[in-house]
Amino acid sequence: MVTSFATLLPAAARFGPPPPLTVRAIGYGAGTRELSGQPNCLRLVLGEAPDPAATDEVAVLEANIDDMSPQLFEPLMAELFAAGALDVYLTPVIMKKSRPGTVLTVLAEAGAEGRLAPLILQGSTTFGLRVSRRGRFKLAREIRTVETPYGPVAVKVGRLGERTVQVSPEFEDCRRVAASAGVPTREVLEAAREAARRQLEGGG
Image (cartoon, rainbow, N blue to C red):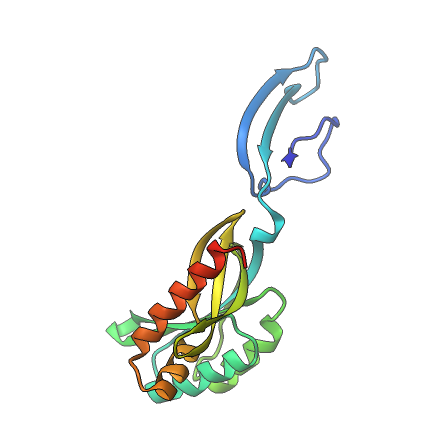
């Protein structure tokens, strides 16, 4: 699809950053009419928009914490995941007065901030947190179940357009199947990847 964020109207309804697109051409032109206080010029940008399914927006919630027992992070992270967080991670930092601290970062679907922020405020020692929205590019994804010599395993498949670029077995499935079969988890992971590739190559 070809899109443009320029307008041919005398005045734009609003101004802002361009939408995500791959720029193919940029053109400039000058009009013949004299305008008071501004140039009579036009810039047109022509580009291809990405597949709408490949972009979205996520909420980012962050808090700097330097007075909380490390043992309390694990139950808080579990609670945030249970409430719908896409990802939760911890980053060690050095804070004021050279105190070691931790940045708690939570990624979530846009609109989930109101549900997750109270969990952070109640489950940690922070007095506040930062919230922002970030644009995200992502692979189109699906979950497939593949048969391995040790049992069925769920596999996440990521596609860029029509091309498969990621094949990732679900680790908890692999660990459970490995424990049941009495083999190393690594063997089940490798078997699941190979089974997924065969299934994809066969068009199944």
